Image 1 (spheres, rainbow, N blue to C red):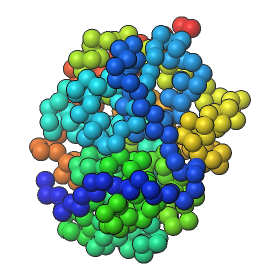
Image 2 (image 1 turned 60 degrees about the vertical axis):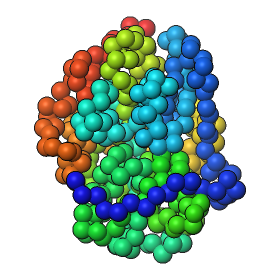
Image 3 (image 1 turned 90 degrees about the vertical axis):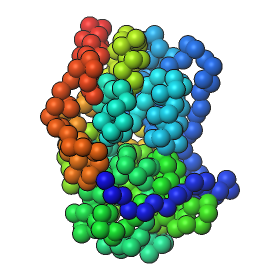
Length: 353
């Protein structure tokens, strides 16, 4: 697969950069990896289901102590998973697909989290970008050159006449969602390279709407839907050695979603989002809408058709070392890319309460 030149964004943001206003400072809790009683969870974001599983005590009720770790990139995230530093990941389904197929790493999707909640293309108008066409000849910031939401971004740009393969733009490697949000809000990296555009999901895309120099130019769901976005991922070995832990984790997430989706709890959930993510009530309200009320791309169970579309999207833009059959890949099984046994067990467990 030919990938056009990459521009490194290695030390992304200077320590002294102030990002517009204080509500853009995202929570970055770090757990002690020495705590053997803690389930180490490596994530790009606090999904609403996770927030309420924590805030309402559902993890505790399921006998789990979960420690949240803010990841810096998909590369770091999976390195930490494979080294045993993390037990469970929140990551895009595409990240798991990439490693399962291209690197033959036995990682496994255990359940879905969302279908691309808030997944939008954000541009920096202060750097002269006001439309997708303005990105011709520019760089677009991504987590990694062949992983995460890069193919979603390629889909949007290709539909608007810009091809990565033809050199219409190039990729600028910056890191995870938090790092890209900080960089595009600042308008540049710590080395002074301008940041023109990136694709962001919740809560960062909602935060971007309140930065005067940023503009939301495209919703990914207008190009591909359904889509499997954030998912729970483990190594196959960990899941098979700890089936009840995985089942209990998913059961707590199911209860967290059910709590959040109850209209009677809306104000509580919005307040919890604001507190955990350290954002304004308005941003928290937008996150709630995109994550819970948006039926097209919000949170919920894994969608096999969405996972098929995620795989097909990667294949469309040359993301596999050899052709794959997406229908075969999405078939659940104990040694497959996706194993639905823990989800099914969790649903029964919650129903029996």
